Length: 395
Image (cartoon, rainbow, N blue to C red; front, side, top):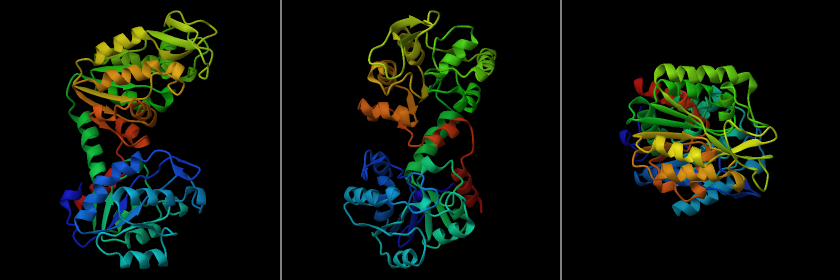
């Protein structure tokens, strides 16, 4: 795969695919982190003497124009961050876009309207891909968050542009995540949490062949405890995956992977409760209680497991962290991982929210910008964007 430093950009017209799928409220950007993360690539391209055409999706407008998902607020925010005009064209492809792109001078920035306003984007339509490609002489993918989608702006466009490469952010994701799974510093500990085992099955199976220790937390841990024969009250459980959970624990034992679950909980009546019912061990969950956070003994255990780790990969909260009443386990563990001397890699929207909320962003070795892409990478899948760029580099 080629990256920016491998490509000559002077005088080029660059089509840059970014992930500006930022949260909006009343037409205003709530969190501009994804835009900020793209700035090194944007500045590198402009400093190299190229003109720049930026494209991204936003939300799910389902192939039709929807003003609620316009990239206008994004163009305005990017303009402020780079301190130069960012012109938004009102169409994705078409005569107006082609004309304006052809007129671009080095240092100028044009932004296409939301890619998903065009039905050809999600269908990876060849004609739409060709029209996108015709706008530029160099294609750069810096959208790791969209790299698990076989869409036109991610895959199809590479068929029609002679020079294709990954941007600085994509390269960072590739190197950190690739190294973590290919040749990790040991001990290698993975911490996987969240609500459902079903969404993380592939990850758990893939990591069992790679890690030295696996910690399962969050509501998904309830299914594992039930597989061990323990009652979990009214907690979220995937009964159809109890046997699968038992098989995962057996596989961990057979492979010599240390496997950990919370040993105590903070319980409540429901995730929105204003006060907890109390703390209990995993053997003593009341029939009328719901497991909503890991407890203090679990914190001590997990802290000990990761203390001397060479690599920690963490995805998913330890409890119903959206409610401050049940955020203690996730926040305390976040502080522990942030202070570790080893390589610390985290990803996933919920996990990233906690890190930002605590102001610990700079304390982690790497924070992935991808949600679904990060999970599929952990699952061992080949991401369509990487496959497309690798195939292009071999030609």
